[in-house]
Image (cartoon, rainbow, N blue to C red; front, top):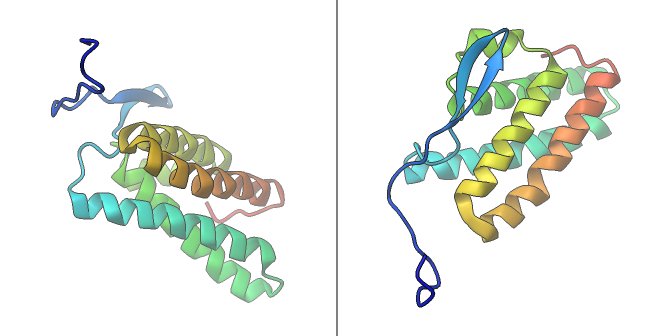
Length: 144
C-alpha cells in the first residue's frame, strides 16, 4: 500500500476459509456474501444467542429452561447455516461442543469482515454466549 493513503479498500470478495466435518469440506462465509439487511439480521441473531444463553443460565424452572434451550438451538442452527455452507441436517449432527467451536470461528470471521467498531461490539456479545453454551453442554444440555 502506498504511504500517502490511510486505507486501501476493495470491493472484491475474499476467498472463504474452509473447514471439515467428517472429512467433508465446507466454507466459512462470514458477512461478505450477505445483503445489508441479512447482515443486520445476523448481528441481531448473535445478540439473541447471547441473551438466550444468559437467560438459560439463570432459569430455575425446567420447563421454561427447556423452551429457552430449544430457542437457543434454533438460533444457533440459523447462524450455522447462514454463515457457512453447512446444511441444517449436517449442522444438527455436529455435537454441541463442536458447534460452539464453529460459532467461535464464525465470530472471528464476522469480526474480521465488519471492522473494528463492529468487532468490539461482536466480541462483547458472542464469546460470552459461546462460553455459556459450552458450560451448558458440560452441565448436560442435550438439546443440540
